[in-house]
Image (tube, rainbow, N blue to C red; front, side, top):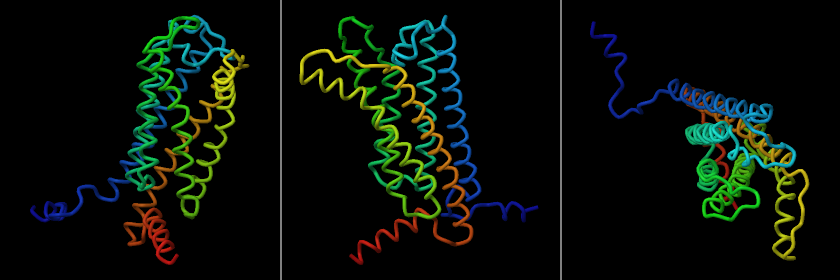
Length: 260
């Protein structure tokens, strides 16, 4: 009766999680994140099709205008779900050693926190007085727009030479770079307004913002898939005694620097 117990006991000093447990943990984080993103997307779709919940024009109105409608809770819920799912992706990427540097990790943390800021601090009504809450909302929105593409580009650039992750790294870079043109309709009029001191109109900013958000949601799904794939590859390489893609890539980079 003591033999099975002895076989199942973990030797002193060994890691608490077995490779199988780590793989299941990463897979659970990635699947949970994708579920959160899917539910957040469904909430946004409801806001776009239900005029009673959100009587706004999706072509010209900004997404933050949903916070001022009867369906505000759907808007806030989508932000909270996206933030929670992004945090799960961040943890999974760290566990799989895809997030090895501090820059990309910090930017992803900024992304998660700024999403909460957009939900907590409501924008000022159009034409109303500028409030502290409105300013905090504006700053949170700016950080949200910039942080995720920057994180995607950093991860894609860092791992672009690693064979196991080239596909994910390439898509991460492409989606991050594809989001840049969508910032121009916001940045250019803002800069001209500051320089010229006059109002420069913007066209279809609501539609442009929605396309940008769609790209960011796709990027999040790619990062979740990357985390799941990297976690499985790490477990497989650990069980066979081979080096994981992350560790082999870091070792190769260190060797190149030493040789140079």
